Image 1 (cartoon, protein in one colour):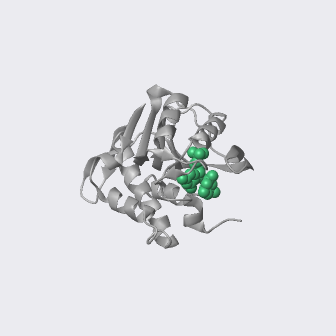
Image 2 (cartoon, protein in one colour):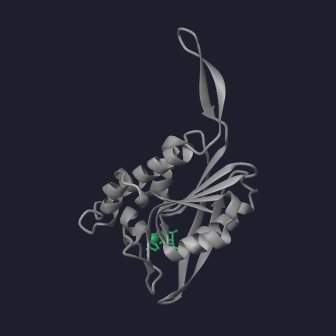
Image 3 (tube, protein in one colour):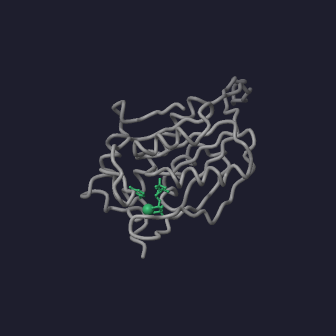
Length: 217
Ligand SMILES: O=P(O)(O)OC[C@H]1O[C@H](OP(=O)(O)OP(=O)(O)O)[C@H](O)[C@@H]1O
Ligand SMILES: O=c1cc[nH]c(=O)[nH]1
Ligand SMILES: [Mg+2]
């Protein structure tokens, strides 16, 4: 599995990442959501460079111009709730994409132990398509794996791009073990070393869903 880490090269993504992490900036919910979106836009553009294009003739007011257009059917999947602004960034670039939505939530058995439940899925058929699954946080990797398995009930994608903003080292290894190596690419804004006893990424950024939409009960 190929892993592309935006932290390996200087770019504006680093600036947006610093604002997402910063306790003095991240409490501005509008900016927090917009930064998730902006990183989604940039990742969409970088992923688009790996896609297949075909040449078509386009009529301009003066003549016919040969133009390259996307020759893959993209499906943009996301995981509620923190995935929503990140997904929007992708959708603003892949405007002809189909979309899939999955809900995954942690149900705590006790303080430190939880199961992840998938309750909702809405997806088009996925056979032969390019699936991008966008979720800003990849902590244990459980939500991503279970969402992917739920999506596989809708068909077998030709390629899977897993897009995340912060991944733990453990989750990168987990995705490597559980996703098909020959047709998965993992895109991340940063990889952090630690996940704590509550399965939060450290240093991470905190609870992405709460920061984007407000604290839940
Ligand atoms: O890799 P994991 O250990 O499964 O954790 C990652 C999940 O945690 C976050 O969602 P959360 O469950 O907090 O729900 P939310 O988006 O509603 O805040 C995040 O958006 C991922 O879906
Ligand atoms: O660090 C983490 C882990 C899971 N979910 C989050 O929002 N943040
Ligand atoms: Mg959350």
